[in-house]
Image (cartoon, rainbow, N blue to C red; front, side, top):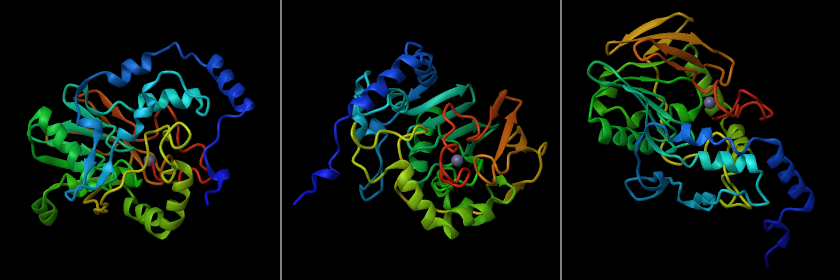
Length: 303
Ligand SMILES: [Zn+2]
């Protein structure tokens, strides 16, 4: 026997009124974000689908096809609906010539910075499968190159979990490719994801709703991106820690200047500036939607 009280319901009159108030309060006619989100698009894979070698789905945007209509249904906040549609952009994008991003293959992005002979991978998504798919997509459009370094901007799993997917076995065995991270990276990555792992996962299930059916009466989006990726995760120990604001590294001929941002969006986090490309990376401390403001244990979550 099914319990009808657990079934998704229609929006009540008060919810419909609140959605209408939101529609009139915000400038929905300003669509510049859609142009910005599409800028620099180079190519993608169908539905951003990532699978394991055995064919199990790690990530796919196909279940979000219901977001094709511009107008929000009464059950969804119109601002969330708009953001959800923006988050349907996926693939490889050029930020500036020499700097690229893979977006929409995970809740996080991977940034690829071209050096003199290789590519520096900044943040490696949640899963090994996703990271490999993202790097392959980059290689397809920019040509294969050796990975010259990996940088983890912060301790949240979706920024390091897939690192094995971008490093060859011999690179791992010989540690010839530097893995660069902010000071205290391992301490916080382990305390957040292993010691507090069960509590973090339970909270993430409430925060992101991965157990809800996807749809206009279920899970729609997390604001930052779609949801948590499945797949294989491995934590790799950094080989080089950034200790202080102003620290510099020259990686594959490219100069990086770092800024420490501890106890911000994550307990160990850092930013960097690349003079060659005039690119500033603020990790997850600068987004259109500060997703870690609302959770009740702010700064202590995955994202
Ligand atoms: Zn984060």
